[in-house]
Length: 129
Length: 129
Image (cartoon, rainbow over all chains, first blue to last red; front, side, top):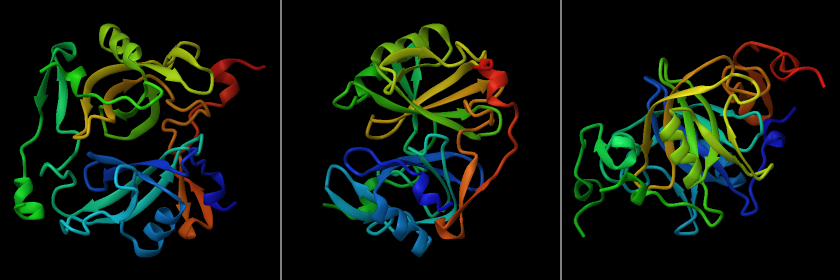
């Protein structure tokens, strides 16, 4: 059966995609895809998303150079979430961290702690504004 | 700063939570939490979610025994996704697989392939109906 037929998109035509580093399993980010961005991701081998805030189709790394080369696309039992393993160039996070999940709950959520070093200052990723 | 203050819930008061195996980094599932289920997850050390289909608060493993012991709760740069590392008992997936992401795209999405063995038949998890 065609894998696309197993996918369920939400009322906005979107499905969440978890992006995981293919080398060591670090979860890098979560972003949203529509049918077209999945097809382009498959066709090009680089992740493409739909930005809900900008209402715009975008390729990861199009301005930063921090592209993601797709190694595997999985989907869950309900067909409503994707898991995509990638080889990540540079920092996945726009704040310059390798993973967007660089902060964790501390003291039961009463505080937070940063769990990894910043790889590059954001103004060096996108240029000073 | 209180970590809860960094979180952004959607218009239904929900935030997606990626559940990852603390031992080897396998992504096990994705489910939704509201503020109360995060607080109960923190307080009990076991994952609790909000079921959108059943409109019901539930503890993972409440009927199957396949509970998840929380090791770390992280959140992403936008504060709109959680990543929770757990020690998983048994199968995370209600279909009896260790991970809900047991199927991958094959032939560019024209087919699918199962990537891990079923650990237990579903009727042995929940009892025959």
